[in-house]
Length: 319
Ligand SMILES: *[C@@H]1O[C@H](CO)[C@@H](O)[C@H](O)[C@H]1NC(C)=O
Ligand SMILES: *[C@@H]1O[C@H](CO)[C@@H](O)[C@H](O)[C@H]1NC(C)=O
Image (tube, rainbow, N blue to C red; front, side, top):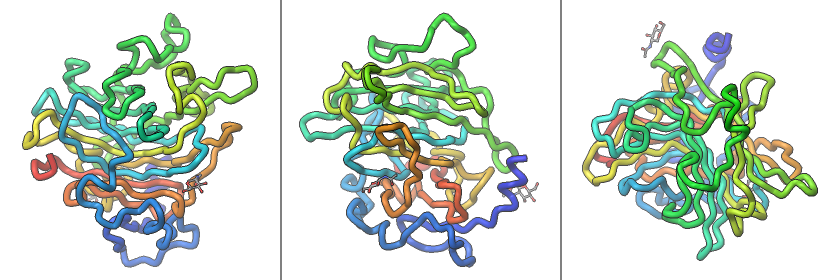
């Protein structure tokens, strides 16, 4: 059983930002984190403030945003994958949101193209506070173009009439509960580069041995992203429309140091190359993104599994 396996895992955590160990245990040999790499090219030591997160842009229509996650920048990103823990959120403001996101983007300065998918609560869109599977695309940095799910022409759902296929926008019923239930969903965004196929970006939900296509974003929607992505990111995001309104909790509402069944996570994170082959990012090649470290942190599971934990409680100080 999943929880037993996790319980048996000796976990050590390496805080990407503050660079301290939560447990006293030495890092295992299979350590994803190369300490030097964390402070390499992508790492902005002044993580407070906007500068460290300017390359991951946020969902509209909200204004105040906090994010925490990992990012990989490379010349040739053709896909992203993760098992995403599913947590519901309490909402006090209907114009707030809390999301767990996988994202690919191509940033050419003036030209910004991006796709993302994940699990979120966003009452202003759904008129409920449930957790939903979502998909979103844009061709501008402020996410004014494009839309969520199938709210505008763009994302093409897979055989819409077939009810067995999960759809963006659907409610995610199986949720994690603190220290009790671990529930997650595997999502993948991957570009189909087979010759003659057209290079569209596909969204899949993986369940056991089955990979369900949810639909695709035609390559023709994009300019730079029709070739490949230049950045991939896995992150939690929360926000509210007005500065000072407390957003919902990020992830489970508990800090990443609490680990499995208590903190939210992205597990088995990987990237796809041009042939759609998965590559586990050595954490040498990922950077932390966090703009409100007082409230929302990121910690890598140094025990392996390409997993990181993220999140934190509701806090008006980070709204
Ligand atoms: C989690 O559950 C275990 C087993 O029921 C219990 O011993 C432990 O105190 C709980 N921890 C927290 C933080 O609630
Ligand atoms: C991540 O980014 C680096 C460049 O910063 C690249 O060398 C690496 O191959 C990328 N992908 C993976 C899977 O680590």
